[in-house]
Image 1 (cartoon, rainbow, N blue to C red):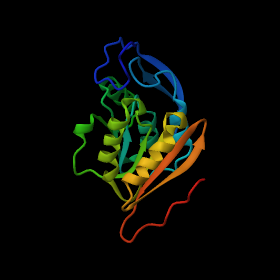
Image 2: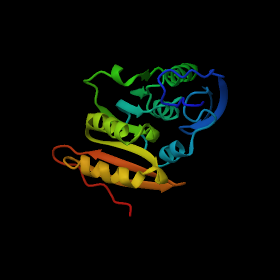
Image 3: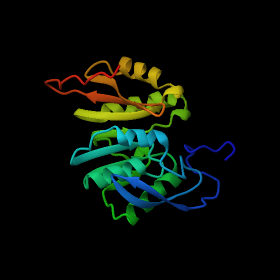
Length: 214
């Protein structure tokens, strides 16, 4: 792809649509992917670790998949919680189109695949599940998280998977320092070289502390 990245807004490479078999929310499915998006040939290892190490989502409310790609997290959330509204957010228009195609083919009407600026300002999230685009750079990544994490509803959790050798431990420290008032930040799981980081927004009265994994 040369200088083109999966976080390019409008990939210039040919789509080369393809169909792949995946397992999401315990179901064997066929989905459409394409060139110019993240991990077009399979559910990547980090997303697999995230999906395997997060609890079932709430039954309803608004959910956020930040950096959705072709949609494995969004599709999983929508399948698991058909009465919820899943916001699949990405800057890559091709990725958003793929999420819409896959949702339509699977009969999922509860996914909104949109650019970040198209999420209404008054929407808050019962959960955030994300394999964030680490390669956009530290400043851009931090700005994204500073924007979206405060939109967690009270007594709700955000779950983020980050590869250890791409800075998961330093990101955990940054999250803990940045969200030090009214939040808890912990490592929830480790697997296949990835960390799953959990950010809880507490409420009033505060929710219970979350367990620490050493």
